[in-house]
Length: 116
Image: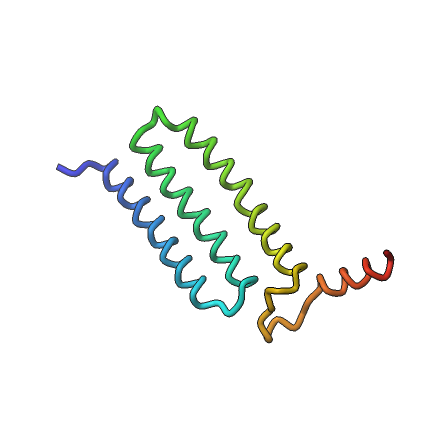
């Protein structure tokens, strides 16, 4: 007989899988590197949280360790993605899509060059 807790665990796992699917669709659909970083960062973070909640629900004794892993993931993933995007922009080798005409960072970089 299937218990209520198994329904909850399966629901969390299916929800996490759906966010991974949205991640893949977003990465394939967006035109350039900079716009692809958004689904490549946000959707996996949500799906990792849902998977971790499913594991915490299945194994309550592991909850403190899983919470530490979740916090570390949520702290490092956006920071790493930001630094990778910033390095790609400053290298000049990763082009922006033509529709991304609004570039505030270029104006800021030009002001820094003039000041130096």
